[in-house]
Length: 142
Image (cartoon, rainbow, N blue to C red; front, side):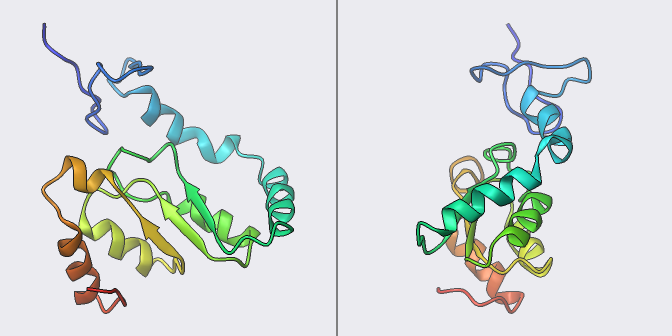
């Protein structure tokens, strides 16, 4: 039996709760293309205002549509979240290449970045990502 892989993100059909459409894209990729239209940003603003009252120091925002996809950070999500709060944001989910980090920061992202899949499913190491950021004149601890 040959295993099918998503044409967009390369997830295998053996991943639990994953289905494929007629374009051979997985359900995670399909839903991520439509998410900008499904998020009620007015409601999210109210939720962030409630969270501000908890005196948290920062928000960790995980783009579950991009998490594990290794196609890059969800710039639209983090731009919208940045408009809702003045607190620092840790962006999580999506990085698959060192260039994804520099592109994201150079697109005016001001918070911290977190990632895991790039280190589990690619040949890249944290040191390589840090060196890429440093070469782009982006402050990073080595």
